[in-house]
Image (cartoon, rainbow, N blue to C red):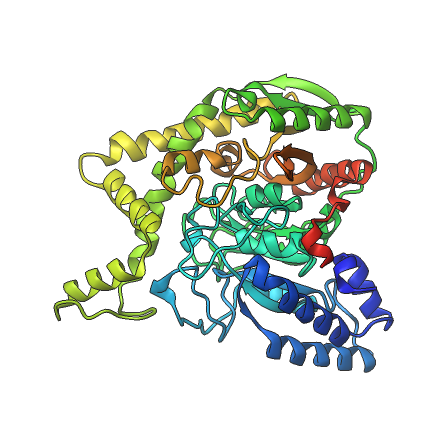
Length: 490
């Protein structure tokens, strides 16, 4: 059986029992990458030599009685904003071209400790700013279900790599929906944990109060497995929760589960085909014993403007460090320090990053901070309060993950506001710091293409295991996640 047919759990078991060598899996994975990647465009670098070396080390360790970890021999792809010692971590930006960090992100360390094998670095929107994968300085991924369409963003490469069967598991980052939205458009599972559940140490920052590492996988069961490995307190991250790793929930049924359906998520901006697919999914949840309860989140309409004030303000601060002095290539400019910094940033940052830095600088500037930034903080607090009120009546909130089907590459590039609205249904949970999962809910046709639709499940803060359990039970009963794009069979 090829590695493309194995999920992470089955693959780990085959390796641990000696039924399949890790080296064979890695060679199979690299062969698939060589065959599919030129068409898909998901990866910025393939780590073939280091992957083979690690595979041989793991096989030798198992032969010598080493106890295999939870992800023993599982090939993984990492988004290009997760640091690995000596591996180029460019965040999709020219300003970091060639930069190789001297340290490794905590989540990557935990993957390695569990026996995983990083095989590639994936494309992403520059500094995680985008919803289509088109803002990278180095290449753009394509949607495996229709190569003329976006896989979503900013974790475009990791999502496309999993959906196309290159690897069973990948790590992305989610600031306003950048794991969940591409997971939905690519027909896979993607999870944003409660804020602080996964360490941000070694994740290059975009918006520090929003950024979270999140796993993408072919099944929710593999997401659960990854979260057990990745979660837990990290003293190197000041925002890390002092909590034990997330253990898989023992829930075996959705009977009696109250699921809230917010009316604000089903407004005029929702594609009719997405609406119909989600309505069918809600019926499937009810058939499994869940009880549908109407809820209201009145401030939903303010979430996007609130997010683009707070996230850009934090981005303007975080990206100030990329000045030609400490990181990446330098442009001399007029010979002065100020001229060098301006020339380096002008040449190194792309249009979307510049747009967001300018917006963030404006909302933090003297005379405007209270009018914009202060009000956005107040809206964020109101959103959190509305979620808390809703969770007094329900255990989960369910909705579409994305308001539209995967759109064509280039379709929204000239319309930033339209692009920003791609995250309208994922941003509220990000602002509130809540755990949120996108799970395949079905498919809808657009012309000749059948395109994936994602169902979003949001839980109270800290209820990560329960959100994942509900997603696992839903996918186990519906099997939408078992469908594969034709590209994955090539």
